[in-house]
Length: 367
Image 1: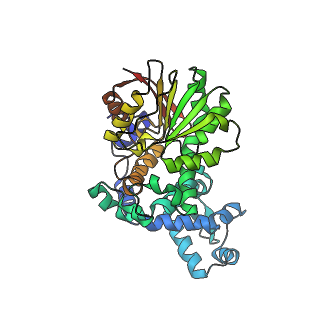
Image 2: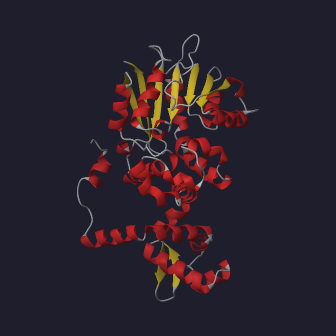
Image 3: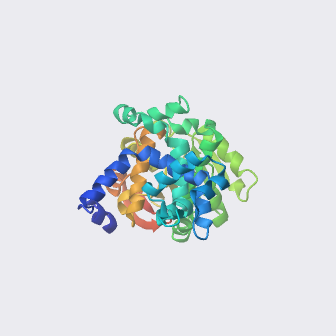
C-alpha cells in the first residue's frame, strides 16, 4: 500500500506512550457518550457562551443562561472537561474552551460530520456488525425497507435529508471551482454526462461556467424528478437534461450521444458501489465513449490525503456505506480504484490531487 507522507508517518510506527494508548482505548470504549455529550454542548449553546465569555463561566452562570438543571450542567461540564473540550481554572472554578472545543464549534467539516453522524448514521451503526456479516445495509431499516439509501433518499425525514445533503455537498462543493477549470479550461468540453448527479448542483455549476456546454444528468428516475424540480427556472437550466437509469442494472446502457461525447463526470459517485459494480459501470460508460472522450472521476482517495485527520474521517465514512447506504462500498484508495479502471478497459491519463477538501480527479481515457 502506498501512503502519502503524512499517513506513512502516522500509520507505520507506534507514536503513543503506554498511558496515551490506554487513554485512547478508554476513549474508544466510551465513544458513543463522548459523541453525544459533545454534540449537546454545541446544541445547548454551552460551548458558544463559554467561548464568547471574557474570562470563562462558572457552572452557576451556565445554569442561569441555559435554563438547564444544575445536575444536567454539572454532568455535561465534567464530562467535557475529561473529553478535552473544556479547561478549568481551579482557583475560580471558571470554565474556558480548549483548542479541541474551538474546533468542535468552528471547523465547518466537524460540524457537518456531527450532524451526519447523528441524524443519518447513529442509530443505524448499532447494526454495523450485521451489515458487515450480511453485506447489506442493515442499519437502513431504521428509516425504511429500501435496498439502498438512494432509493429512499427523497422519503427520508427532512432533517435527515438536510444532514445527508449537507455532508455530500460540503465535501464536493469545495472542489468545484478547481474541477471546473480542469474540465473546461484544459479540455474543450461541450457535452457532458453527470453520472449520479443528485440535485443537479454540479450541472448548474457547469452551465454557469461554460455557456456552450450541455449537461445530461444520469441518475435514478426519482432522483431525476428531484433534480429537474431543483434546477427549474435557474440560469442555464435549459441546457440540463435528465436521463433516468438504474446504474446497478447491468443491462441499463448509457445513452449514445449523436456527434460524440466529450466528458463523463463522476463526483463522489463510484464510492457508492462495490468494486465489481464499479467495473460494470465503467464498462457501460466506456461503451458511450470515443477516443476523445474523457472520464473525470472525483473522489476523496484516503491514501492520498495531505493530512492524517482527513484520512481518519474518510475511513470512518466507509462504515456509513456499510451500515446505511448499500452494505458493500467504501471510500477507496488509489490502488482499488486503479484496479477497477484497468479491469473496465480504461487507463489513467493523469491524476489531479489536493482539490478542495482533499479530492483527487482521475482522468481516464480508452485503452
